[in-house]
Length: 303
Length: 315
Image (cartoon, rainbow over the protein chains, first blue to last red):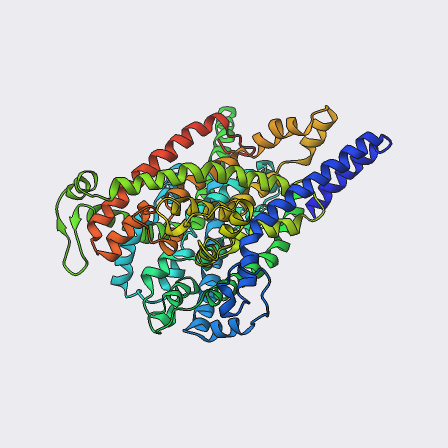
């Protein structure tokens, strides 16, 4: 919607000069070439995905045909059913949903709280704590991966979902804290001061001023967190060892190597599995995109 | 009396101020409490443990044995894979970071032009990043298949040259991984963050500049770039860290091969820890890596004072 607002200001400035045909032609040509450029970039980025999508419907003998066909001679919807029912695919799918939702909710709540404190509150140790947060962000995951693995082992958390969810409720990751802080810092402090004079406390300022202005960053963080948890690979790889408890990311790889069966799955099945794994994420993005746009509108309204 | 009244009147606001400051600090600590707990149990504790383990040999089955800086000496002088892994990682980062950041800014600017189909374009650009790593690797393994893959068939149709072996070739596995990374990066987090930054630039600034006769390029250079400089800075930091830590794509696509052509540093650490259970040595490798990352980021932060502008900073 902010785009519409932006577009309408452009349109109105266009109207001001509409009498001059040279300006109109230049405007149309400029818009046209922008559209062309954007569409070409979009198409280039889409090719791998489209190629995989049509491949996932091809029959087994056509997947390795020379020269390759683009459009399948006939669509084999059964590829999807076959993947869905092979190995522990359904388990992996619902395990991933459960873990992702729990981890994302925790990450956003605890990171927004910490980001607010760092951006807009003065307290002893702020610089030190924030420096520590930044340092955590720089910390390669390998530094803590090995000792936390040992920690989870001692706690009896290995092969459970606790390591994949609990830490997200405790800070949500330096990445998101930094993102929230950066965004909160761009909101004028005068708004806080005015609210303080009106007698608002910090929790009221956070909930009625800062968060409503921050919907774009909340939506962005929500989407990013969902994707990163859905995609999470290294942690499930070392934590989970029971194939029934796998997430999709390590499950798909397990499926590719298929230690339990004699035949390796063919490429059309792997592609179908990859598409199934990608679809919920696309759905979340489209769902979240609306909030994203709404948030942009709200932040676009001044005063 | 007058004197007393005067001291009181200056004293009370001061006490009031310190009370407010105390309340503000209390609120801050409450908001930070989850982070503090997480920091202790999942960051600080493990760091201390890792630091100790890096000075030991430890295979989980037996208690760690203290060997001083032996692991570090081994990494720099005896480990045949250490320098190669570092070199591969830097090569990858040097290409992926600038192209990725510039590409992400470019597509974010395209999306910020108020084009009619913007939300469709945004979805198209974002799709590669939405594709999970493992799925992306499967898709690209098939796309880059030397015989049946889309890319080599396009190369053949266009130029009648037999395309390279890509992921299976020691010379072409690295370019293949860079290609996959570029595809996955430019429409992803960085683009979203750039877009949020671009949309946070007050429209009034552009309107005023336009009235003053500033063209598109001037508006970009004098308004957009300074206003999004915190975003640019944030993205650059993330890109460097992300590129140097790259793991999953290589792990799934090549396992570091062929002939160690894509054997990144993170793979070296992973193999050391979880394939050979040399936990102590793996911790030492991780620490060396951490110090390298810190140096890179320190330089970036030092340089940032010169070019990053914050609108609402609490000094």
